[in-house]
Image (cartoon, rainbow, N blue to C red; front, side, top):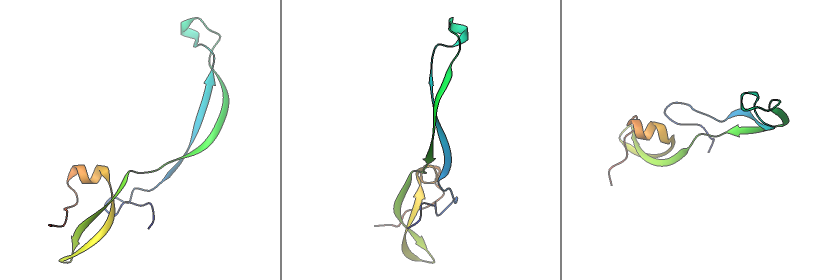
Length: 77
């Protein structure tokens, strides 16, 4: 299964983690210096749930934001 939300299409996004050291100028320091930049991924919070599709139960991966918003209905037990 891919890391994509079934409802909204949310998928992993690339980003960077920036490491800084030093004291900020407004706190009396000489300023914050960047000491390292490393790549990272922002991965959506996907949950595997059963939902009805065309009247039949189907297991899909949906992000927690869509479940909370009520954009998908769970399959009755």
